[in-house]
Length: 278
Length: 121
Length: 133
Ligand SMILES: Nc1ncnc2c1ncn2[C@@H]1O[C@H](COP(=O)(O)OP(=O)(O)OP(=O)(O)O)[C@@H](O)[C@H]1O
Ligand SMILES: [Mg+2]
Image (tube, rainbow over all chains, first blue to last red; front, top):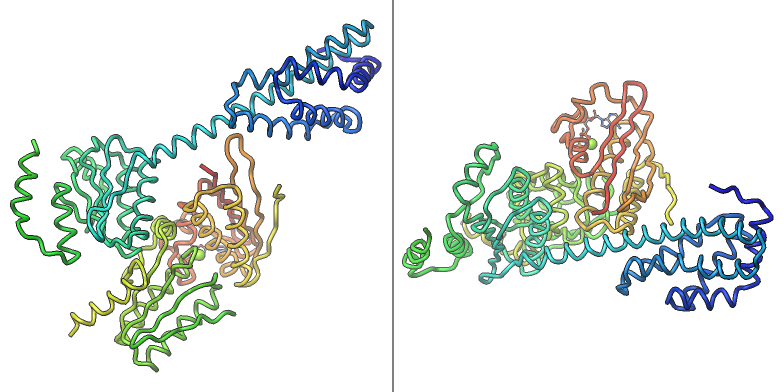
């Protein structure tokens, strides 16, 4: 790295200060960013260069804010990086016009500074975008696992697909929340559509049933496949006194009976449902 | 120290915990309740924790103690309104509140008490 | 934003204040409602332990700015008698004070990181951390 002499630094900073209007106009043209945003940045840079004695914390704060805003507005990462890097080009033109060796050496120093700030901008942009993606994934997760009301006082979560620990947790929280909101004392967790569970998922299911009980509601787990039953037993997980039923229909009729609803013709309905099972 | 008010509705005592209780107040509530059950001849107690943001081992133990104590005094206790986040945390903490009846809300708590009394004769 | 804070744990009222402070910060850094409840419950257990088993202590509360997500770190410390057998103290149901023996073992399950340092005559320090998801 070049160690810049003080004279070179001073020359480029002088240029930066005296040519403000021209540099800002050129920077705006090259970057395509809004003049207001760039003016704020320029001010912050000036403060850092002149009074701040090389303290760029405010500049970085401003850049972080700008790049987060740009993520939300849908700008690309290269767009966002160009916003910063193009200052180099604008300043280079000024240094070239000046023509002196000090201005050019000073420019090398200044461009390293801009590179640092540009990389920082890029990093905050990426971090902000990752966060948005994560948030969206979470929202999708919630959407993809509906809690449905089967009957007055009975809700169900039909789980379909692979259950990981995170998804199970989200679903279970939602189930408990629905119990409160709908005043339902019975819940059916149907895992007919779940190919396999691991220890953690089985534990989450179990904890949910216990948590529901603490809140004053009863859960029935239905549709446990033979392989899953096998896993649970081999893992040594105690399902204890938790009620399990073969099918969602069985679970529903159980919950109905528990909540005091008379069921007539239930036998036939059950046979019909069972007949559909392979 | 804060004292939690105890309301009487027919032969049911209702305690609604609205504030973050320190341990001293929790113990005081326990004693107050026992006294009131005896003096009022109440047959049921409802502890409403809808507003309670955490139940730790101390409050959990109080709930179990109250349930056991009132049962000895021939009254039934129902804890109502536990929030999902609180229930999930209690399970993780390892507290299952054995022997404590629970209901989703006040209305269901009252119904549960009536049901108990109905079957008890 | 939030510099580290130090709070005394000398009375039952202090335990309540610690809970409230932790709740406020946990919400501020965006912990989910369930995670807020977990860290506040752990704080309540550990503050009470310092009060009951060590005659008082203090908690150091710090917001962490991780690379990807913020976190909350609580350090409970006291100059009490210390714990002779850490293994035993962390066993569920083990208590010298007629408690349920859930405070330490339970708090450990409620947080992401748990560290217990203690020796007889040297006081006790418990550090817990919860990260936003
Ligand atoms: N800060 C401390 N100083 C000294 N001993 C402690 C401290 N914290 C815990 N202990 C010891 O560890 C044991 C287990 O603590 P733990 O919090 O798990 O249970 P407990 O406090 O006895 O009961 P509770 O379930 O009500 O919390 C205590 O009984 C005590 O002997
Ligand atoms: Mg304890």
